[in-house]
View 1 (cartoon, rainbow, N blue to C red):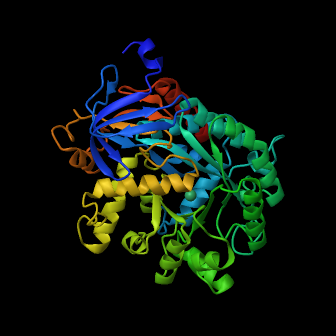
View 2 (view 1 turned 180 degrees about the vertical axis):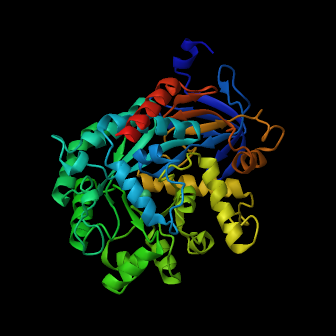
View 3 (view 1 turned 120 degrees about the vertical axis):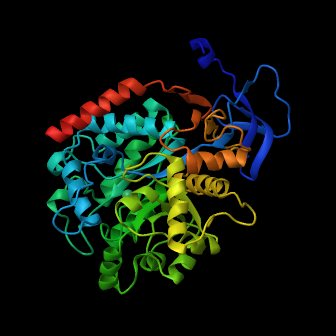
Length: 467
Ligand SMILES: [Zn+2]
């Protein structure tokens, strides 16, 4: 393919098979406008002359609804056992030590590489749950937005969509003052709202969205939670609110001791939880909490590889779905950066727990990979607060083309090819090409910035390990 062909404004693609919000369709013509929004999706039309043909099944781009970018450089460094049984809390101490060495330059290098990896693995947008606000030791930068801007810049450089969620973090535990190793995270509620105002024009200029992430009930006192959410919605009425919830049983016990209520119940009783909210993890919920949280319209933010890596537990997705609950996928600590692998792990956790097969298929959509992908795209888009809910008019033209010639897919019908991609193609991705807002970001040989971004990431990680 020559360079001229890459920049020509074709704005249409034809696919033999495409996964539309209602399920698989044959002979689909997708058209989008100059702003990168889908103008038309037509099924059952022969390939028009002059329009490129997709090299395989066409999928909606997967939103990644939960990311802490800097943690990608920590992957592989915490898989060792000490004298005592290890847990989330031991991992957290190692993560804090690492977080305290991050510089604006290293954060940008790590994020550029991570976001590029996301694109190559089928994610077309990311919600960045960003809690590093200050310099090493907690000393404020001249501009509170320094590290937020590094993340927005990284997303713009590689062409991934972004919802940036600056984090409200004020306590080390229920009612306890912050610990010294958390000094970089601490920001007053007014300062956080001022930061959002400062970021708004920058985010807008690149099509990014902003929201707020009260870190967790243990890190944000009730009055700050209330003021932060009210302030956000005065500024940006539709903006998403993401919060870590009930990830660990110790957190549930501490919340009970503090308030007499489990975390999700406390939140439902004390905060205006609705469809703008994303409850990240929500692993440990009672039957009443499943029903109440699902009824609120909030999205459950599931991060299967991180939840497995940290020993969190298994989210009861069938129970959540029975209440009409919505969900999406996050890669959180980035121990794994691959949308297909996250779907596989999510289904496998349910199978292991219940000793059943094909748990997340349904009567309406028996193909498990198809059912999961459609639900995760819809829930991820809702959590992102951006028009990225799949292949339909008005949504952003974010999509992934699978390689029909990949061994795991070759000769299979489209729904089985997607199952091959999710359950059988790992470590040799079947992603062929990725488009964001109508622009091709991943070519058959990878992202254009791959070599330089990889080198910068390795250099940044080496420096962090020597610091
Ligand atoms: Zn997280």
